[in-house]
Image (tube, rainbow, N blue to C red; front, side):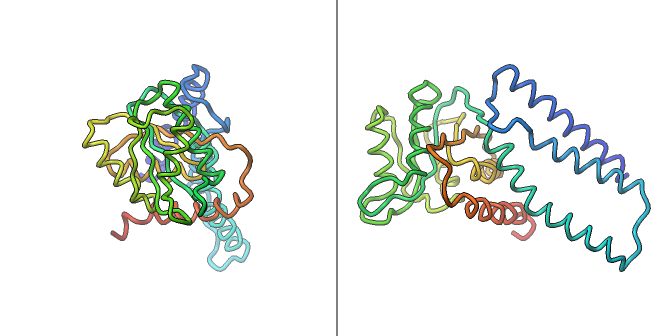
Length: 252
């Protein structure tokens, strides 16, 4: 039964690989990383099938224990990284009714950090390109008196987005709150199709959070002006957060 189920999953992941490249060839999506996450899933499932057909190692075998430890470590870190680079760097933009931009740090003098500026510029480019009519900016308090969303709105207006097209979510203190708040905005305004903008490493968790609330959003990675200096830290933090999100339904 296990072999049959794994084989079915392998078929599904293999079809996903084929579909990914078909979409890339048609120009339906823009892949920043030309290897789909489902390739890694397929390889993992093949390894499982090989293991099911082989002999079991002896208990207490040091080499087997080391192999298991290395495999577990690769799984913990590699699974998250593969999602961030394969899924997170793929641009799924299409015509939508709203564009949600997730906030980031705003300095005490009201200046947007480079991270949030990249996100806002990308969101504004989507609205300006006709991919969405409403721009939803979500964030929390800034370093000073100016709220993140107010600084984001000022930047968006300067970039040509009409102020009446901008909606602020000032209670977006974290990913979960932003998702919950924006879902209520969608429902109140009758919005059905949504694009979501953030940095690539953040998008897998955002996608998961929206799906658990019954919303199928389309993610667009922020166009980065340069590689963030603290990127390794952000990646490690997101790996931990991803596993927390995966485990949450099991304990709640």
